[in-house]
Length: 426
Image 1 (cartoon, one colour):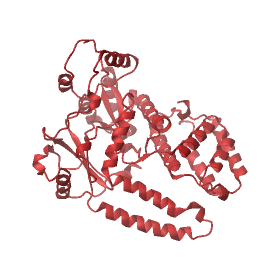
Image 2 (image 1 turned 60 degrees about the vertical axis):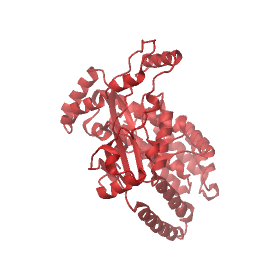
Image 3 (image 1 turned 90 degrees about the vertical axis):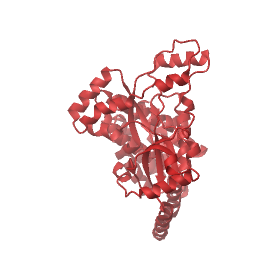
Image 4 (image 1 turned 30 degrees about the horizontal axis):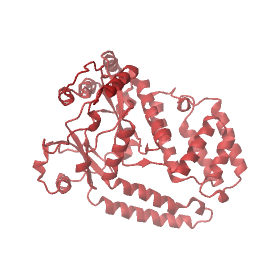
């Protein structure tokens, strides 16, 4: 999956500069950046990303999440957090990531969607195919694509994720510079991290279970608590940073938080320098991870590329949680009937009772093996469910399917990192 999100053709630097200058209200390019790396860090289907450093006069006042406690009560609360959990020491980045849409990408997307819509209409005319409502699916897919073509939406999503995970140490999201973000340009804090792919290829070593647990914890919080799920969780959009936990703040008098932050150093780059020479050398890579662990570093996941999110409306959220509960309790028969009752077209379902019994048989088979990823493949189970759904014409809501796809991606990552990870013990 991640290979589909990289190695797309890049647009020219001239086009990039022209787009950025427009975003900064015509300010000359050389007056915007103190540094600008002309080679893109990555090129995707709709945009490419650069690393840069804004001129001091343009740099944002600072990430409000980095401001220290303002009173004794807040300071005591932070000290409690330090004692009961490994709390990352937050250090601002002086660099930014600039995402720039490809020129004419909107026109190309509209053209491709028209072609897809035409073929969907043709297929929809085939007998027994109309229950799939393929034109509706193309319309929903088109809406998802259009959301990615306005980078202000990704910036707003980052702000929401940061608020949700403000007190959670398992994951981190870059700070968006909303005042400089436009429809074609996104400016956000540069995230220093190691791509998760490196840990999938060379192994997580002593941090393997911690990284896997952190990813699962973050995803389940998005899904079950926040109802705001990152819907593009391939390994290319997840990185690992390292930090040293915060220390107790015993200075109960007044002190200058801003000066403390200026003196702070992001240790992730130090760790990166230690690990880079050992890429594609699994034994040496794991040995270096052991040393990093002994030095007191802890891993934390960074999620990027938040243009696509899934939010279930009140009805669909209730339906999903009821279904999730039924499966967690191994009540496949009830899960089957819930899927039939709450699908888009219950009247079009074929043999609803047989469908429910098949679900019961499937869930009981899973129960005998537990939900540990090493014992079963969640992807295989979901594929079997989708096959049953097609056979019995149980048409699920599009946002529900998006959640299923996210679980499929998570399972693939989790299986690589920790085969004993158990989704339902959470």
